[in-house]
Image (spheres, rainbow, N blue to C red):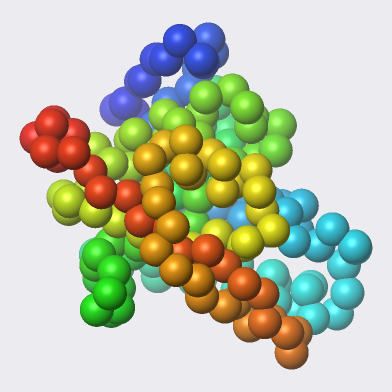
Amino acid sequence: MPLQITDHLLMNPHISFRTASLADKQNLAALTIQVWLHTYATDGVRHDISAYVLSEFTTEKFAAQINNPQYRLLIAENKCHLIAYAMLDLATSNADLPSAELKTFYIQETFTGQGIGKQLLAYVERNLNQQAYWLSVNSNNTRAIAFYVHQGFVQHGVTYFEFGGNQYQNKVLVKHLKAVDIKHM
């Protein structure tokens, strides 16, 4: 049964959070393409963008991640409709960072600003058995950066996402969970 979470910011009793299953792979692929294009294809869609999203965000890749214990996909639904998800990689290999990486944290634009991101992040942390985790976010995505900082992330450094022959700077952010937070997980 999906976990029902309520929050003073969110008055919609139809929002639920759960671990993704194989039945979600098609919706995950569709939502990812929608959010990625809305966020990064701000000048429109060109060949390298369409080739990237259609090759990277496939149902087959989501099925592989759902079946791989290294990954944990957690979703938010509104009346059984996918509206957001988080993907954790529990075994990243970077000596300077915690082993858990929040690889993806996408919320459908219609549902931003309603507290769903805050609740999904809290759900992620309850499902994380580690003291810290990290993420990278496009340096131009000021709304996302402000959200993460407000949730307790601090900048650790920068990295670069290579795409279409260009490099795009991403901020590396880390969040250390409090001992009280870890105990309640």
